Image 1 (cartoon, rainbow, N blue to C red):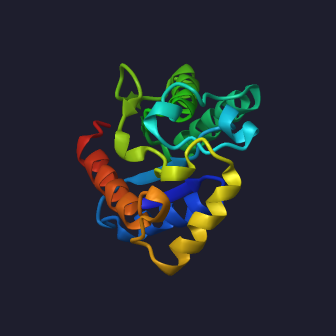
Image 2 (image 1 turned 30 degrees about the horizontal axis):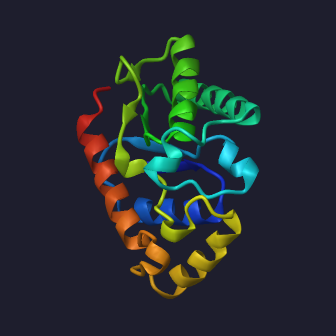
Amino acid sequence: PAIHFLVEGRAMLQLLLAVAAAADDTAPRSIYVLRHGQSTANVKGLIASRPDSALQLAGLTRVGRQQAAQAGREVVAEARRTGCHVAIYSSDFLRALETARAVREGVLAEGIKVWPTEEVCLDEALRERDFGDFDLGPDSSYERVWAEDALDATHTRFGVESVQAVVERTIGMVERAQREAQL
């Protein structure tokens, strides 16, 4: 499929490019990937990458809600331009779910068909990479992990989830979505 990225952040973009390169290019779908809006953890400069910190604690800020609404308008514009329907998948982390719900609300308000019809489709495979020992620590720690990533995509130093593991679970999720989405 064609995979388009509406994301911020070097690490996220690198990960998604790896997923795009590995995805089956024979499927007749376009996939758009969107990063969550600004979260309270972003503002505080904290890493929130584990369920106990990210499921309930790191929701969107006012700016993040505005960003999510804008993303919804962009999805509407793209759906109208291409004539496509929209399937919305999200991590269950609060910041991602709030973003996905805002996008879904905007798309539905414009009369565009959305799947699943009842709610955003949650998938744990879309969770942020687990940053191990750095969870709830300063986001400046990302640099230490990324330096190790540049040397070895399979490393789990500091208890982090390897880049390879994230790519594998994300590819699996994309493949499931291609089979499941009823549009």
